[in-house]
Amino acid sequence: MPENSSCSSASTCGKSSCEGCAHNNKGGGIEKEPMNPFSEIKHVIGIVSGKGGVGKSFVTASLACAMRKAGYRVGIMDADITGPSIPKMFGVHGQVHGNELGAVPLETEGGIKMMSVNLLLENEEAPVIWRGPVIAGIVKQFWSETVWGELDYLFVDMPPGTGDVPLTVFQSLPVDGIVIVTSPQELVQMIVKKAYHMAEMMHIPVLGIVENFSYLTCPDCGKEIKLFGESRIDAVGQELGIPVLAKLPLVPESAGMADEGRFEELEQPHWDTAKELLCKMEADQRKHP
Image (cartoon, rainbow, N blue to C red; front, side, top):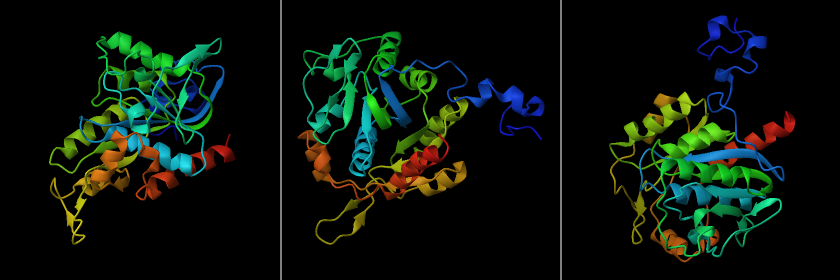
């Protein structure tokens, strides 16, 4: 039987021929951008969405905080170059400076390292009006020219859709898996499937789905109000064979604290499933380095 039965070349594939095969590599077999020699990153996790406005940066920041509070070394690459929001959520301002080793990321009060185009601009409110190839080049520099040091997890906050930046990240970085973020609307099935199929084409594992704005809890009676209708995420996850990692409520106080740069002060009660999955990745790597 072929060693790689899921490979499209499985009928002619054997163990020796799988080595170096494009179908056996994350990112479609394209050579990866070299990591900065003074960085050691164990796991790269992409946070993606098929459309904008679903709270992808919120999910990125939440996962980073949850894993940092669990004792892991964590960084965030804000790859949403034209719409960066991560630094503001954490109250991180100022400019990144470099040395002979590369650019040194700034850190949050809780010790999360981050790199964002907003940390390179003199005025963080200035618009970034760059074409796709320039944006893709910046994302590569965030990887190869940034001194991340030792990290257990690097979370990559990507812009919505399936354009230049997600393609660059999938092709250039050794992505271990992605988390798809969506909301409970009728378009959910199409939106999730777009992101899922792009990852599938690029040979990137899909770790799971997060449904944001799942419900609002009434402050008076505690009833869950489905603002965007009934959730369809469980059926989509079952159809695609991927787990639902969280169903996040709409909490107005969370938005307020993010606007104030106090995101690390938020409680993170909804991330047990995601933390368990990510911790297992780290445990498996320790068993099989």
